[in-house]
Figure 1 (cartoon, helix red, strand yellow):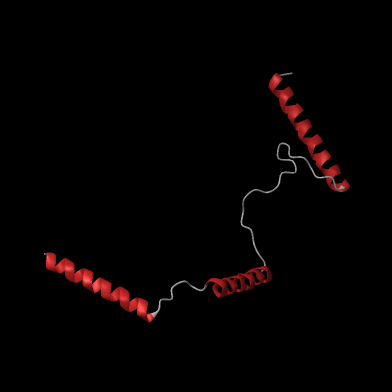
Figure 2 (cartoon, one colour; figure 1 turned 120 degrees about the horizontal axis):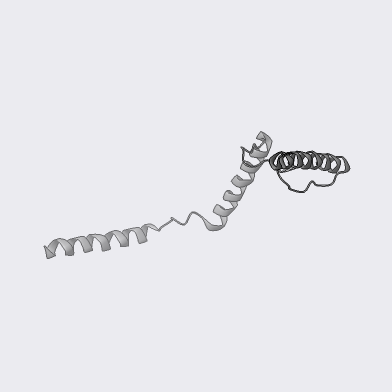
Length: 101
Protein backbone atom coordinates (compact mmCIF):
# COMPACT_ATOMS: atom_id res chain seq x y z
CA UNK A 1 0.00 0.00 0.00
CA UNK A 2 1.23 3.49 -0.87
CA UNK A 3 2.21 5.88 1.96
CA UNK A 4 -0.01 8.60 0.52
CA UNK A 5 -2.99 6.28 0.58
CA UNK A 6 -2.29 5.31 4.21
CA UNK A 7 -2.11 8.99 5.19
CA UNK A 8 -5.36 9.76 3.36
CA UNK A 9 -7.11 6.85 5.11
CA UNK A 10 -5.79 7.95 8.52
CA UNK A 11 -6.92 11.54 7.94
CA UNK A 12 -10.37 10.33 6.89
CA UNK A 13 -10.59 8.18 10.01
CA UNK A 14 -9.48 11.13 12.15
CA UNK A 15 -12.21 13.31 10.59
CA UNK A 16 -14.85 10.65 11.31
CA UNK A 17 -13.67 10.38 14.93
CA UNK A 18 -13.70 14.19 15.32
CA UNK A 19 -17.24 14.34 13.98
CA UNK A 20 -18.34 11.63 16.41
CA UNK A 21 -16.72 13.49 19.33
CA UNK A 22 -18.43 16.77 18.36
CA UNK A 23 -21.79 15.00 18.06
CA UNK A 24 -21.39 13.43 21.52
CA UNK A 25 -20.29 16.73 23.05
CA UNK A 26 -23.29 18.48 21.52
CA UNK A 27 -25.66 15.87 22.95
CA UNK A 28 -24.13 16.09 26.42
CA UNK A 29 -23.98 19.91 26.42
CA UNK A 30 -20.19 20.10 26.52
CA UNK A 31 -18.64 22.86 24.45
CA UNK A 32 -16.80 21.44 21.49
CA UNK A 33 -13.08 22.20 21.38
CA UNK A 34 -11.73 23.98 18.33
CA UNK A 35 -9.94 21.48 16.11
CA UNK A 36 -9.57 21.25 12.36
CA UNK A 37 -12.82 23.09 11.71
CA UNK A 38 -14.89 20.75 13.87
CA UNK A 39 -17.13 22.88 16.04
CA UNK A 40 -15.56 26.10 14.85
CA UNK A 41 -17.77 29.17 15.18
CA UNK A 42 -18.76 30.95 12.00
CA UNK A 43 -16.38 33.76 11.15
CA UNK A 44 -17.37 37.08 9.63
CA UNK A 45 -20.67 37.60 7.95
CA UNK A 46 -23.25 40.25 8.60
CA UNK A 47 -24.67 40.61 12.06
CA UNK A 48 -28.29 41.58 12.16
CA UNK A 49 -30.05 43.50 14.87
CA UNK A 50 -33.77 43.29 15.41
CA UNK A 51 -35.88 46.37 14.86
CA UNK A 52 -36.82 46.38 18.55
CA UNK A 53 -33.16 46.33 19.61
CA UNK A 54 -32.31 49.10 17.16
CA UNK A 55 -35.19 51.20 18.53
CA UNK A 56 -34.11 50.60 22.15
CA UNK A 57 -30.57 51.67 21.38
CA UNK A 58 -31.78 54.73 19.46
CA UNK A 59 -34.01 55.87 22.31
CA UNK A 60 -31.27 55.32 24.86
CA UNK A 61 -28.75 57.33 22.84
CA UNK A 62 -31.24 60.19 22.38
CA UNK A 63 -31.70 60.28 26.16
CA UNK A 64 -27.94 60.18 26.63
CA UNK A 65 -27.29 63.14 24.33
CA UNK A 66 -30.18 65.15 25.78
CA UNK A 67 -28.77 64.66 29.31
CA UNK A 68 -25.30 65.59 28.16
CA UNK A 69 -26.58 68.73 26.47
CA UNK A 70 -28.36 69.74 29.68
CA UNK A 71 -25.18 69.30 31.72
CA UNK A 72 -22.68 70.84 29.32
CA UNK A 73 -24.72 72.96 26.97
CA UNK A 74 -23.48 73.16 23.45
CA UNK A 75 -20.59 75.45 24.46
CA UNK A 76 -21.18 78.02 21.71
CA UNK A 77 -23.00 80.78 23.53
CA UNK A 78 -21.36 84.19 23.58
CA UNK A 79 -22.84 87.29 25.09
CA UNK A 80 -23.68 90.21 22.83
CA UNK A 81 -21.07 92.35 24.62
CA UNK A 82 -18.33 89.76 24.04
CA UNK A 83 -19.31 89.44 20.39
CA UNK A 84 -19.19 93.24 19.99
CA UNK A 85 -15.80 93.46 21.75
CA UNK A 86 -14.31 90.80 19.44
CA UNK A 87 -15.80 92.52 16.40
CA UNK A 88 -14.25 95.87 17.36
CA UNK A 89 -10.84 94.27 17.98
CA UNK A 90 -10.91 92.57 14.58
CA UNK A 91 -11.93 95.77 12.79
CA UNK A 92 -9.07 97.56 14.54
CA UNK A 93 -6.62 94.81 13.54
CA UNK A 94 -7.73 94.92 9.91
CA UNK A 95 -7.44 98.70 9.85
CA UNK A 96 -3.87 98.52 11.22
CA UNK A 97 -2.87 95.94 8.58
CA UNK A 98 -4.42 98.05 5.83
CA UNK A 99 -2.54 101.12 7.05
CA UNK A 100 0.79 99.23 7.01
CA UNK A 101 0.48 98.53 3.27
